[in-house]
Length: 67
Image 1 (cartoon, one colour):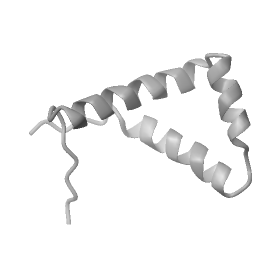
Image 2 (cartoon, rainbow, N blue to C red):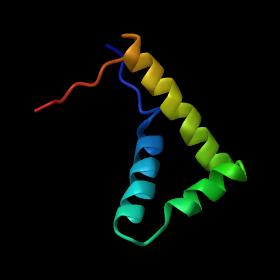
Image 3 (cartoon, helix red, strand yellow):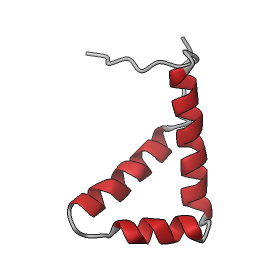
């Protein structure tokens, strides 16, 4: 099993975006604007999220809970 930190920042960033929206600090429209403007950070996060989802769906990666 190979351990990687490749996706950690992306997960934290996306979690933060959604938590701020849930808390009412930000609006989803702000996220839409970043995507429409192809802001590099958000575009890279989306690409990494797509890559991780593909790897999970195709059995190339798995998530384990360590207790």
